[in-house]
Figure (cartoon, one colour):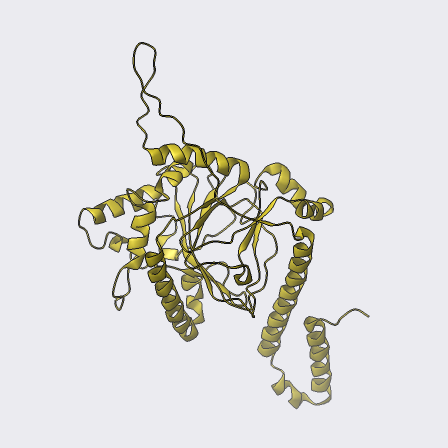
Length: 376
């Protein structure tokens, strides 16, 4: 006998309530239409989540035990071209970081994901993690007062159990003792930022600042189904960073990536019901077990999933998350990034760099012109 879903039970209950109302009209006062609609919506949502959890478990079985840790690729230093004499060509004036970025971009083109160790120092990670978790508390307070504010504070992972995308502000709150997000942005995207060269190589200074958030999971969060972040596009439309704000163990639900699945050929297999399971079972999979300060850069087309943060052995996992859009891809991406509404479509990588340069020259609040990004 097939298990009875919560939605089926609700349907039976609704029919019974209608029968009772026919026999005794006073019963209608106990089964209001709005109450029934709300309950049906909640139970249908619960059924959907349970179905997703069952599929996620099946995908985990298909992946098997052959998943290897994602490690940073060793990239050979390319010799510098030095122009001299007739026909020698132009001298290579790029910095070592810029030359490295060219090689990193080749890895991204091949694998769709790469690990970058020590993108941010541990002390700054600690400060940002403390700030993020405090902002989550404040967001919970504000959204408890007014649920309509939820889209201002939370992104695409708003309703999932024990998981959220917390949208961050570019400016500090009045009660903040320091502007930690400014320090972080300067260290990763400033003039000498650890991630600035690779983003300049991938999206240029015209790349739109598309996401600025923290991905937070707590013990009890379910494993996700394998998915890409957006519909397939010919060019890589979005390059995303997950930066670990603490060491990430297997029990905390690290992200699994299926290498090379950002291509049209692999996406076609994934979208084909008859080929999907075989693709997963034979995938070259990697698990992002990160140390504090390490980052994952990935093409948003790649197949991936967050694993379960275990109730026993797990702990809060916080990732600093931002992305930039490739200007070669125009029009809707079919994916609303995790960004406060007041920032959407208004900031580029070049704008971020210019603001940080002003800060380096003494301006204390270079992002003040953008405000806190809230819609109200």
